[in-house]
Amino acid sequence: MPQPKWFAALGTAAVVTMVMAPAEQAAAAPSNAAPDSVSAATTLYYDDSRAAGWEAAITAGVATWNANVTSVKLMKAPPGTRAQIRITATNGWPQASLGPVRPGGQSWVELGSQAVDQGYDKTRIAAHEIGHNLGLPDNKPGPCSKLMSGSSAGVGCRNPVPDAAERSRVEYNYGGRAAAHIPADGRVMVDVS
Image 1 (tube, rainbow, N blue to C red):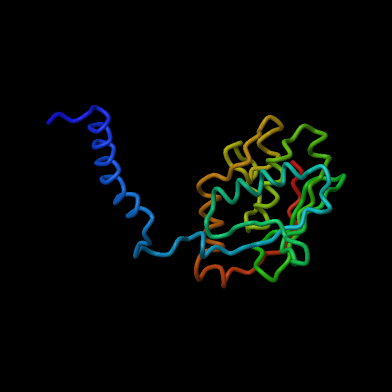
Image 2: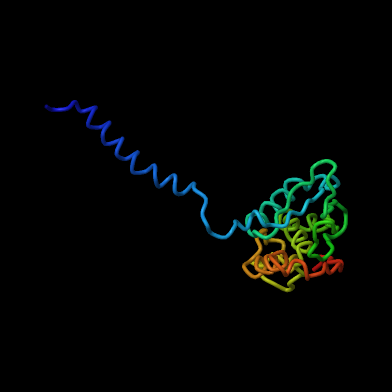
């Protein structure tokens, strides 16, 4: 007996659904692989309440670090939470303390308007200064592709993304046993060219 066309289409859809369901369930099922590195990440809180005018640049700089490294995650400090990174806006040149800062420790960033007045990109400045807190010194002179080249890359440089070597160094600073053995440097890094 011939079946209606809608029944044949329904039968095909049911087969497709049945074939796809196990794959979706398998993808959602927990694996026996190593735990996700994000869950083992060191969380550092930052306070930008004294950085008026820099909020968007800080948010973008933090997002860049969070998207590019897995061993440390930066989060805005909720009220009542002690921040490891204090970010303020100043009239001078950008500067920061050299980390790597640890939970329970404290570092600072000063986002200086003097650099912005000369044409440097706010997001690159914020990401660069946070990079100091994560343990990266300046790498001057350097190309725009290196975030830690800072002002030596020129005012036309808008790159806020750490390169592979910079990402690797931060991963080392916060990953596994190394994190417990690398003290914060504490030097002041002033980013004047």
